[in-house]
Length: 468
Image (cartoon, rainbow, N blue to C red; front, side, top):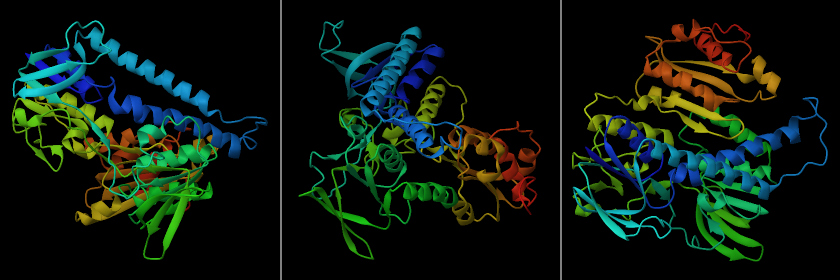
Protein backbone atom coordinates (compact mmCIF):
# COMPACT_ATOMS: atom_id res chain seq x y z
CA UNK A 1 0.00 0.00 0.00
CA UNK A 2 1.50 3.32 -1.10
CA UNK A 3 0.55 6.41 0.90
CA UNK A 4 1.77 9.86 -0.12
CA UNK A 5 1.49 12.68 2.41
CA UNK A 6 1.81 16.32 1.37
CA UNK A 7 2.91 18.46 4.31
CA UNK A 8 5.43 17.73 7.05
CA UNK A 9 3.78 19.51 9.98
CA UNK A 10 2.09 17.94 13.03
CA UNK A 11 -0.65 16.46 10.84
CA UNK A 12 1.60 15.14 8.10
CA UNK A 13 4.65 13.77 9.88
CA UNK A 14 2.57 12.11 12.63
CA UNK A 15 0.38 10.49 9.97
CA UNK A 16 3.52 9.31 8.16
CA UNK A 17 4.95 7.65 11.26
CA UNK A 18 1.64 5.97 12.13
CA UNK A 19 1.28 4.72 8.54
CA UNK A 20 4.78 3.23 8.70
CA UNK A 21 3.88 1.51 11.99
CA UNK A 22 0.98 -0.14 10.16
CA UNK A 23 3.12 -1.43 7.30
CA UNK A 24 2.45 1.11 4.55
CA UNK A 25 5.03 2.35 2.07
CA UNK A 26 5.11 6.05 2.92
CA UNK A 27 6.41 9.11 1.08
CA UNK A 28 6.31 12.49 2.82
CA UNK A 29 6.58 15.69 0.76
CA UNK A 30 7.33 19.03 2.43
CA UNK A 31 8.03 22.21 0.51
CA UNK A 32 9.45 24.42 3.25
CA UNK A 33 10.48 22.88 6.57
CA UNK A 34 9.79 19.70 8.49
CA UNK A 35 7.64 20.28 11.55
CA UNK A 36 5.50 22.81 9.71
CA UNK A 37 4.24 26.03 11.22
CA UNK A 38 4.03 24.53 14.71
CA UNK A 39 7.69 23.68 15.19
CA UNK A 40 9.16 26.51 13.13
CA UNK A 41 6.98 29.62 13.36
CA UNK A 42 4.16 28.72 15.73
CA UNK A 43 3.67 26.65 18.88
CA UNK A 44 7.28 25.93 19.76
CA UNK A 45 9.02 29.29 19.16
CA UNK A 46 6.25 31.29 20.83
CA UNK A 47 6.45 29.08 23.91
CA UNK A 48 10.24 29.49 24.05
CA UNK A 49 9.75 33.26 24.19
CA UNK A 50 6.86 33.00 26.64
CA UNK A 51 8.89 30.87 29.05
CA UNK A 52 11.45 33.67 29.30
CA UNK A 53 8.68 36.22 29.89
CA UNK A 54 7.48 34.09 32.83
CA UNK A 55 10.94 34.30 34.39
CA UNK A 56 11.08 38.05 33.76
CA UNK A 57 7.72 38.43 35.48
CA UNK A 58 9.03 36.53 38.52
CA UNK A 59 12.19 38.65 38.67
CA UNK A 60 10.23 41.87 38.33
CA UNK A 61 7.31 41.16 40.63
CA UNK A 62 7.98 38.19 42.89
CA UNK A 63 11.72 37.71 43.50
CA UNK A 64 11.89 39.71 46.73
CA UNK A 65 8.92 37.93 48.27
CA UNK A 66 10.41 34.58 47.23
CA UNK A 67 13.57 35.41 49.15
CA UNK A 68 15.74 36.30 46.17
CA UNK A 69 17.57 39.59 45.90
CA UNK A 70 18.30 40.33 42.26
CA UNK A 71 20.16 43.29 40.81
CA UNK A 72 21.60 44.11 37.43
CA UNK A 73 19.65 41.65 35.29
CA UNK A 74 18.51 42.58 31.80
CA UNK A 75 16.45 40.92 29.09
CA UNK A 76 18.67 39.85 26.19
CA UNK A 77 16.49 39.53 23.09
CA UNK A 78 19.30 38.38 20.77
CA UNK A 79 20.38 35.57 23.09
CA UNK A 80 16.76 34.49 23.44
CA UNK A 81 16.45 34.39 19.65
CA UNK A 82 19.49 32.09 19.50
CA UNK A 83 17.93 29.80 22.11
CA UNK A 84 14.68 29.73 20.13
CA UNK A 85 16.57 28.73 16.97
CA UNK A 86 18.53 26.06 18.84
CA UNK A 87 15.37 24.42 20.21
CA UNK A 88 13.66 24.54 16.81
CA UNK A 89 16.65 22.89 15.13
CA UNK A 90 16.76 20.17 17.78
CA UNK A 91 13.05 19.36 17.42
CA UNK A 92 13.09 19.48 13.61
CA UNK A 93 16.16 17.25 13.64
CA UNK A 94 14.24 14.87 15.88
CA UNK A 95 11.36 14.70 13.40
CA UNK A 96 13.79 14.00 10.56
CA UNK A 97 15.39 11.20 12.58
CA UNK A 98 12.00 9.67 13.41
CA UNK A 99 11.03 9.62 9.74
CA UNK A 100 14.32 7.95 8.85
CA UNK A 101 13.95 5.46 11.69
CA UNK A 102 10.56 4.46 10.31
CA UNK A 103 11.95 4.09 6.74
CA UNK A 104 9.76 6.91 5.41
CA UNK A 105 10.88 8.50 2.15
CA UNK A 106 11.38 12.22 2.78
CA UNK A 107 11.20 14.66 -0.11
CA UNK A 108 11.83 18.38 0.26
CA UNK A 109 9.91 19.87 -2.61
CA UNK A 110 6.52 21.01 -3.89
CA UNK A 111 3.91 18.41 -4.68
CA UNK A 112 1.08 19.06 -7.15
CA UNK A 113 -1.64 16.68 -8.25
CA UNK A 114 -1.54 15.45 -11.85
CA UNK A 115 -4.68 13.36 -11.31
CA UNK A 116 -6.29 11.49 -8.43
CA UNK A 117 -3.54 8.84 -8.33
CA UNK A 118 -0.38 10.78 -9.24
CA UNK A 119 1.58 13.67 -7.74
CA UNK A 120 4.41 15.53 -9.45
CA UNK A 121 7.16 16.70 -7.12
CA UNK A 122 9.48 19.59 -7.97
CA UNK A 123 12.54 19.21 -5.76
CA UNK A 124 13.93 22.11 -3.75
CA UNK A 125 17.30 23.41 -4.97
CA UNK A 126 18.95 22.68 -1.61
CA UNK A 127 18.29 18.93 -1.83
CA UNK A 128 21.78 18.17 -3.18
CA UNK A 129 21.53 14.40 -2.98
CA UNK A 130 18.77 14.41 -5.62
CA UNK A 131 20.09 14.55 -9.20
CA UNK A 132 16.71 15.17 -10.87
CA UNK A 133 14.54 18.27 -10.78
CA UNK A 134 11.18 16.56 -10.58
CA UNK A 135 9.49 13.19 -10.24
CA UNK A 136 6.04 11.68 -10.65
CA UNK A 137 4.86 9.57 -7.70
CA UNK A 138 2.01 7.09 -7.95
CA UNK A 139 -0.13 6.49 -4.85
CA UNK A 140 -2.94 4.32 -3.60
CA UNK A 141 -3.90 6.85 -0.92
CA UNK A 142 -2.97 10.48 -0.35
CA UNK A 143 -3.20 12.60 2.79
CA UNK A 144 -3.12 16.38 2.37
CA UNK A 145 -1.69 18.17 5.41
CA UNK A 146 -0.52 21.51 4.03
CA UNK A 147 -1.56 23.58 7.04
CA UNK A 148 -2.46 27.24 7.03
CA UNK A 149 -1.11 30.76 6.66
CA UNK A 150 -1.91 34.09 8.37
CA UNK A 151 -4.96 35.99 7.17
CA UNK A 152 -4.16 39.45 5.79
CA UNK A 153 -7.30 41.55 6.36
CA UNK A 154 -8.26 44.08 3.67
CA UNK A 155 -7.28 47.09 5.74
CA UNK A 156 -5.95 50.09 3.79
CA UNK A 157 -2.21 50.31 4.52
CA UNK A 158 -1.77 46.70 5.64
CA UNK A 159 0.99 46.09 3.06
CA UNK A 160 3.42 48.49 4.77
CA UNK A 161 6.79 46.85 5.66
CA UNK A 162 6.26 47.62 9.37
CA UNK A 163 2.93 45.79 9.31
CA UNK A 164 3.85 42.20 10.14
CA UNK A 165 2.35 38.77 10.73
CA UNK A 166 3.10 36.34 13.56
CA UNK A 167 5.85 34.72 11.44
CA UNK A 168 7.87 37.94 11.38
CA UNK A 169 6.99 38.86 14.97
CA UNK A 170 8.92 35.82 16.17
CA UNK A 171 12.18 36.93 14.61
CA UNK A 172 12.42 40.72 14.82
CA UNK A 173 16.03 41.85 15.18
CA UNK A 174 15.10 44.08 18.09
CA UNK A 175 12.12 44.73 20.35
CA UNK A 176 10.12 47.68 18.99
CA UNK A 177 9.32 50.61 21.26
CA UNK A 178 5.62 50.13 20.59
CA UNK A 179 3.41 47.49 18.99
CA UNK A 180 -0.24 47.63 17.96
CA UNK A 181 -1.80 44.16 17.74
CA UNK A 182 -4.87 43.85 15.55
CA UNK A 183 -6.75 40.86 16.95
CA UNK A 184 -7.10 39.85 20.59
CA UNK A 185 -7.29 36.10 20.14
CA UNK A 186 -4.84 33.49 21.40
CA UNK A 187 -1.97 34.56 19.14
CA UNK A 188 -2.52 38.26 19.80
CA UNK A 189 -2.56 37.83 23.58
CA UNK A 190 0.54 35.64 23.58
CA UNK A 191 2.50 38.20 21.58
CA UNK A 192 1.17 40.98 23.81
CA UNK A 193 2.58 39.08 26.80
CA UNK A 194 5.95 38.55 25.11
CA UNK A 195 6.60 42.08 23.90
CA UNK A 196 5.16 43.79 26.97
CA UNK A 197 7.59 41.79 29.14
CA UNK A 198 10.47 43.11 27.05
CA UNK A 199 9.50 46.74 27.63
CA UNK A 200 7.44 47.36 24.49
CA UNK A 201 4.32 49.52 24.74
CA UNK A 202 1.53 47.17 23.54
CA UNK A 203 -1.99 47.96 22.39
CA UNK A 204 -4.57 45.30 21.46
CA UNK A 205 -7.47 46.15 19.17
CA UNK A 206 -10.30 43.60 19.02
CA UNK A 207 -13.61 43.81 17.13
CA UNK A 208 -15.44 41.38 19.43
CA UNK A 209 -16.77 42.21 22.91
CA UNK A 210 -13.80 40.59 24.65
CA UNK A 211 -10.35 39.11 24.04
CA UNK A 212 -9.94 35.32 23.55
CA UNK A 213 -13.62 35.22 22.68
CA UNK A 214 -13.79 31.43 22.20
CA UNK A 215 -13.05 30.65 25.85
CA UNK A 216 -15.18 30.84 29.01
CA UNK A 217 -15.55 34.44 30.19
CA UNK A 218 -14.73 33.65 33.82
CA UNK A 219 -11.25 32.35 32.99
CA UNK A 220 -10.47 35.07 30.45
CA UNK A 221 -11.05 37.84 33.01
CA UNK A 222 -7.90 37.10 35.09
CA UNK A 223 -5.77 37.31 31.94
CA UNK A 224 -7.39 40.55 30.82
CA UNK A 225 -6.92 42.07 34.28
CA UNK A 226 -3.24 41.02 34.33
CA UNK A 227 -2.53 42.45 30.87
CA UNK A 228 -4.12 45.77 31.82
CA UNK A 229 -2.24 45.83 35.13
CA UNK A 230 1.01 45.28 33.23
CA UNK A 231 0.31 48.28 31.01
CA UNK A 232 -1.25 46.71 27.92
CA UNK A 233 -4.04 48.84 26.47
CA UNK A 234 -7.03 46.83 25.27
CA UNK A 235 -9.78 48.20 23.03
CA UNK A 236 -12.69 45.82 22.39
CA UNK A 237 -15.70 46.32 20.10
CA UNK A 238 -13.29 48.35 18.00
CA UNK A 239 -12.65 48.22 14.26
CA UNK A 240 -9.45 49.19 12.44
CA UNK A 241 -10.23 51.53 9.57
CA UNK A 242 -6.77 52.19 8.14
CA UNK A 243 -3.02 52.13 8.74
CA UNK A 244 -0.95 55.10 7.61
CA UNK A 245 2.59 56.28 8.05
CA UNK A 246 2.80 59.17 10.50
CA UNK A 247 5.51 61.38 12.01
CA UNK A 248 5.95 59.07 15.03
CA UNK A 249 5.45 55.69 13.37
CA UNK A 250 2.36 54.00 12.01
CA UNK A 251 -0.98 55.64 12.72
CA UNK A 252 -3.74 53.07 13.18
CA UNK A 253 -7.16 54.68 12.84
CA UNK A 254 -9.90 52.85 14.76
CA UNK A 255 -13.61 53.32 15.27
CA UNK A 256 -16.07 52.17 17.91
CA UNK A 257 -19.48 53.22 19.18
CA UNK A 258 -17.76 55.49 21.68
CA UNK A 259 -15.25 57.31 19.50
CA UNK A 260 -12.75 57.33 16.68
CA UNK A 261 -9.22 56.88 17.97
CA UNK A 262 -5.73 56.84 16.46
CA UNK A 263 -3.15 54.46 17.93
CA UNK A 264 0.48 55.18 17.09
CA UNK A 265 2.98 52.31 17.01
CA UNK A 266 6.38 51.46 15.58
CA UNK A 267 5.10 48.07 14.38
CA UNK A 268 1.63 46.68 13.70
CA UNK A 269 0.96 42.95 14.12
CA UNK A 270 -1.87 41.41 12.12
CA UNK A 271 -3.32 38.66 14.25
CA UNK A 272 -6.86 38.07 13.01
CA UNK A 273 -6.59 34.36 12.28
CA UNK A 274 -5.26 31.85 9.76
CA UNK A 275 -6.62 30.26 6.56
CA UNK A 276 -5.91 26.97 4.76
CA UNK A 277 -2.82 26.86 2.54
CA UNK A 278 -3.91 25.24 -0.72
CA UNK A 279 -2.19 27.46 -3.29
CA UNK A 280 0.33 24.96 -4.70
CA UNK A 281 -1.73 21.75 -4.80
CA UNK A 282 -3.75 22.09 -8.04
CA UNK A 283 -6.56 20.17 -6.41
CA UNK A 284 -8.82 20.55 -9.44
CA UNK A 285 -6.65 18.06 -11.36
CA UNK A 286 -7.42 15.43 -8.75
CA UNK A 287 -11.08 16.42 -8.64
CA UNK A 288 -10.89 17.31 -4.94
CA UNK A 289 -13.59 19.76 -3.87
CA UNK A 290 -13.14 22.78 -1.64
CA UNK A 291 -15.65 24.87 0.27
CA UNK A 292 -15.05 28.41 1.54
CA UNK A 293 -11.33 28.13 0.86
CA UNK A 294 -10.86 24.82 2.70
CA UNK A 295 -10.78 21.19 1.57
CA UNK A 296 -14.17 19.63 2.21
CA UNK A 297 -13.99 16.40 4.25
CA UNK A 298 -16.40 14.01 5.92
CA UNK A 299 -16.17 12.69 9.50
CA UNK A 300 -13.48 10.23 8.40
CA UNK A 301 -11.30 13.05 6.99
CA UNK A 302 -12.04 11.81 3.44
CA UNK A 303 -12.47 14.26 0.59
CA UNK A 304 -15.02 13.66 -2.15
CA UNK A 305 -12.35 11.29 -3.53
CA UNK A 306 -12.51 8.49 -0.90
CA UNK A 307 -8.82 7.58 -1.26
CA UNK A 308 -7.67 11.19 -0.71
CA UNK A 309 -7.79 12.58 2.83
CA UNK A 310 -7.19 16.05 4.29
CA UNK A 311 -6.13 16.63 7.90
CA UNK A 312 -5.29 19.63 10.05
CA UNK A 313 -5.69 23.29 9.18
CA UNK A 314 -6.14 22.70 5.43
CA UNK A 315 -9.63 21.21 6.00
CA UNK A 316 -10.81 24.35 7.76
CA UNK A 317 -11.65 22.71 11.09
CA UNK A 318 -10.12 23.47 14.47
CA UNK A 319 -6.68 24.92 13.70
CA UNK A 320 -4.56 23.42 16.46
CA UNK A 321 -1.46 21.25 16.17
CA UNK A 322 -2.78 18.51 18.45
CA UNK A 323 -5.98 18.32 16.41
CA UNK A 324 -3.96 17.93 13.20
CA UNK A 325 -1.96 15.08 14.75
CA UNK A 326 -5.11 13.32 15.98
CA UNK A 327 -6.72 13.66 12.56
CA UNK A 328 -3.57 12.36 10.86
CA UNK A 329 -3.56 9.21 13.00
CA UNK A 330 -7.31 8.80 12.50
CA UNK A 331 -7.02 9.10 8.71
CA UNK A 332 -4.24 6.50 8.51
CA UNK A 333 -6.09 4.03 10.73
CA UNK A 334 -9.20 4.49 8.60
CA UNK A 335 -7.17 3.76 5.46
CA UNK A 336 -5.84 0.46 6.83
CA UNK A 337 -9.23 -0.62 8.15
CA UNK A 338 -8.84 -0.02 11.87
CA UNK A 339 -12.09 1.08 13.51
CA UNK A 340 -10.61 4.22 14.98
CA UNK A 341 -12.40 7.00 16.84
CA UNK A 342 -11.82 10.71 17.27
CA UNK A 343 -13.84 12.68 19.81
CA UNK A 344 -13.88 16.37 19.01
CA UNK A 345 -15.56 17.13 22.36
CA UNK A 346 -12.22 16.48 24.05
CA UNK A 347 -10.10 19.08 22.24
CA UNK A 348 -8.18 21.18 24.79
CA UNK A 349 -7.78 24.90 24.04
CA UNK A 350 -4.74 26.55 25.61
CA UNK A 351 -3.30 30.05 25.95
CA UNK A 352 0.29 30.16 27.24
CA UNK A 353 0.14 33.58 28.87
CA UNK A 354 0.44 34.38 32.57
CA UNK A 355 -1.92 33.28 33.94
CA UNK A 356 -2.20 30.33 31.58
CA UNK A 357 -5.69 29.62 30.24
CA UNK A 358 -7.04 26.21 29.27
CA UNK A 359 -10.45 24.83 28.50
CA UNK A 360 -12.08 21.67 27.18
CA UNK A 361 -15.70 20.87 26.42
CA UNK A 362 -18.56 23.34 26.63
CA UNK A 363 -18.30 26.77 28.19
CA UNK A 364 -21.07 27.78 30.57
CA UNK A 365 -22.69 29.93 27.87
CA UNK A 366 -22.49 27.11 25.28
CA UNK A 367 -23.99 24.58 27.68
CA UNK A 368 -26.93 26.82 28.52
CA UNK A 369 -27.45 27.59 24.84
CA UNK A 370 -27.50 23.84 24.14
CA UNK A 371 -30.39 23.45 26.57
CA UNK A 372 -28.64 21.88 29.55
CA UNK A 373 -29.73 22.59 33.10
CA UNK A 374 -26.27 23.76 34.14
CA UNK A 375 -24.58 23.57 37.50
CA UNK A 376 -21.19 25.27 37.94
CA UNK A 377 -18.41 24.78 40.46
CA UNK A 378 -15.58 27.31 40.93
CA UNK A 379 -12.47 27.12 43.05
CA UNK A 380 -9.99 30.04 43.29
CA UNK A 381 -6.26 29.52 42.92
CA UNK A 382 -5.79 32.01 45.74
CA UNK A 383 -6.47 29.30 48.34
CA UNK A 384 -4.50 26.50 46.69
CA UNK A 385 -1.36 25.67 48.67
CA UNK A 386 0.92 24.92 45.72
CA UNK A 387 -0.21 28.08 43.92
CA UNK A 388 0.77 30.06 47.03
CA UNK A 389 4.15 28.32 47.20
CA UNK A 390 5.04 29.21 43.59
CA UNK A 391 3.56 32.70 43.89
CA UNK A 392 0.90 32.30 41.20
CA UNK A 393 -2.45 32.71 42.90
CA UNK A 394 -4.31 34.47 40.08
CA UNK A 395 -7.04 32.42 38.45
CA UNK A 396 -9.57 29.68 39.12
CA UNK A 397 -10.85 26.24 38.13
CA UNK A 398 -14.40 26.02 36.81
CA UNK A 399 -16.54 22.96 36.04
CA UNK A 400 -19.63 23.12 33.86
CA UNK A 401 -21.89 20.15 34.61
CA UNK A 402 -25.30 18.73 33.80
CA UNK A 403 -27.51 19.07 36.89
CA UNK A 404 -29.57 15.98 36.15
CA UNK A 405 -26.71 13.49 35.71
CA UNK A 406 -23.68 15.21 37.22
CA UNK A 407 -21.83 14.62 33.95
CA UNK A 408 -18.93 16.98 33.29
CA UNK A 409 -19.65 19.08 30.21
CA UNK A 410 -16.63 21.36 30.42
CA UNK A 411 -13.55 22.20 32.47
CA UNK A 412 -12.00 25.66 32.32
CA UNK A 413 -8.91 26.93 34.11
CA UNK A 414 -6.86 30.06 34.57
CA UNK A 415 -3.66 29.80 36.56
CA UNK A 416 -0.38 27.93 36.92
CA UNK A 417 0.01 24.63 35.02
CA UNK A 418 -3.44 25.05 33.46
CA UNK A 419 -2.23 23.93 30.03
CA UNK A 420 -0.75 20.75 31.54
CA UNK A 421 -3.66 19.94 33.85
CA UNK A 422 -6.43 20.37 31.29
CA UNK A 423 -5.81 16.80 30.11
CA UNK A 424 -7.71 15.63 33.23
CA UNK A 425 -10.79 17.42 31.95
CA UNK A 426 -10.34 15.99 28.45
CA UNK A 427 -10.16 12.47 29.85
CA UNK A 428 -13.15 13.08 32.13
CA UNK A 429 -15.28 14.22 29.19
CA UNK A 430 -14.02 11.36 27.00
CA UNK A 431 -15.09 8.85 29.66
CA UNK A 432 -18.34 10.71 30.44
CA UNK A 433 -17.21 11.10 34.04
CA UNK A 434 -19.40 12.69 36.69
CA UNK A 435 -18.64 15.18 39.43
CA UNK A 436 -18.86 12.39 42.01
CA UNK A 437 -16.14 10.43 40.20
CA UNK A 438 -13.83 13.46 40.17
CA UNK A 439 -14.56 14.15 43.82
CA UNK A 440 -13.67 10.59 44.82
CA UNK A 441 -10.43 10.52 42.80
CA UNK A 442 -7.47 11.11 45.11
CA UNK A 443 -5.33 14.06 43.99
CA UNK A 444 -1.76 14.43 45.26
CA UNK A 445 -0.93 17.09 47.85
CA UNK A 446 0.42 19.73 47.56
CA UNK A 447 -0.33 20.25 43.87
CA UNK A 448 -2.17 22.74 41.70
CA UNK A 449 -4.16 19.71 40.56
CA UNK A 450 -5.92 19.63 43.92
CA UNK A 451 -7.86 22.67 42.72
CA UNK A 452 -9.58 20.41 40.16
CA UNK A 453 -10.86 18.14 42.92
CA UNK A 454 -11.94 21.14 45.03
CA UNK A 455 -13.85 22.67 42.10
CA UNK A 456 -15.66 19.35 41.65
CA UNK A 457 -16.71 19.52 45.31
CA UNK A 458 -17.77 23.14 44.73
CA UNK A 459 -20.35 22.03 42.15
CA UNK A 460 -22.30 20.63 45.12
CA UNK A 461 -21.38 23.49 47.41
CA UNK A 462 -19.09 21.17 49.39
CA UNK A 463 -15.58 22.45 48.68
CA UNK A 464 -13.36 21.46 51.61
CA UNK A 465 -10.94 24.39 51.57
CA UNK A 466 -13.34 27.22 50.78
CA UNK A 467 -15.66 29.09 53.15
CA UNK A 468 -19.33 28.13 52.77
